[in-house]
Image (cartoon, rainbow, N blue to C red; front, side, top):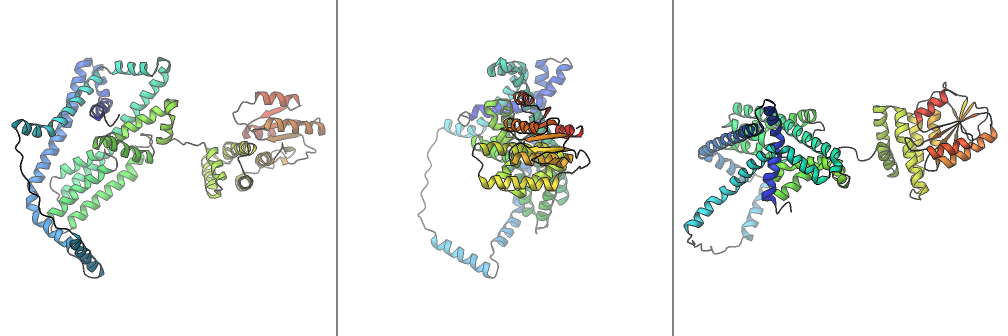
Length: 524
């Protein structure tokens, strides 16, 4: 449908894009009490006049270039002959052999006689008008759509909310606001970067000696709006002109060198600083969007690829049924840190798991890494193990790797509370979580607590409540006067029922996070 209805949808999409850009100016004039209609007509007239002026300058410069092309004909012929001349040696002989094979393989055919078919004056007029009528009709439709959207923007917004549903006013308002903000910010930043590229490029071409340097600088600014393909079109034309007008190759080399320096500065300096996450799209999403919209709508689709994909990503963020769009196209991390870490362990990738650990510790500290990544990853492992989805090899690799990370990155504080004991509730995941707590508190990790003022039972979900209750009964039976704390490593999960059950078997305190457990052992 998008492809078949392109003659209507392309002007509509272009009008939406222009409305995004012109709406702030219209609102500014309205605040000056100029009126909605007058403000819209003034801004639209100025906007399209600017577009027309740019087109007129480009066309004038292009005609000037075309008029000078016959002067460069001999230079072009000389360079073509030089390129076609086969070099000496093995490469030259191979090229000559390929030419001979090509000539032998060619078939000779009798020329086909061409007869002219008489045409009516109406058909001639139609053939002449067809290339002009379609662009003119598209331009007129864009102007009309833009004016209507600016005049009735609140009405269109309300109707869109009505289509989506009055019960989703908050979500729809947020989505529309974010889409408008992202598209406007992205286009403005892209304009700034493109101008920072095109203006110096035009100035450099002027000093290099390329005719009509202003044209090439202007085209470079505009063509960089087209992802990937635009920048190569921008350099191709002045580079070919440099070949045509220069007797040697120095002008061509200077043109390419200038382009390479400016493009590197734009890509590696300006874009990371100015763009940031303004578009909110991953690099893969940009490529796929460019290919998809070009396939649907041709060159105009390539121009609209980024704004349309930004809108699709925002819609995916706010509409649950379309959430896969934000997952596939957005830049936000898809997996939580603990899920990424666990996935690397399940993949038996110790190197990347260690890299994730080092990066998280560098950014957030060791305690945050073990509290927010390792312990939740152990919980994920326990869940899969109880479901029978974690084989013995991966289980052993996971526990060994976590044990090594605890040894390498955890901090030891034997002075905090050496009189406290930590008891694993049931299995090795509980033991590893207890080892982390032991490293940060100096408490003794043991299966048989003795002479302890406080016993902390380490229990990792999903069956942490039952295992902790069983361990608490054993501790209460052995040490009836000792304070018992259960570290139920559930993070922010609901532990209301588990807490009630543990209190019934004599547990004094239940904690769910590593910092809380450390604090409980400090005050034992």
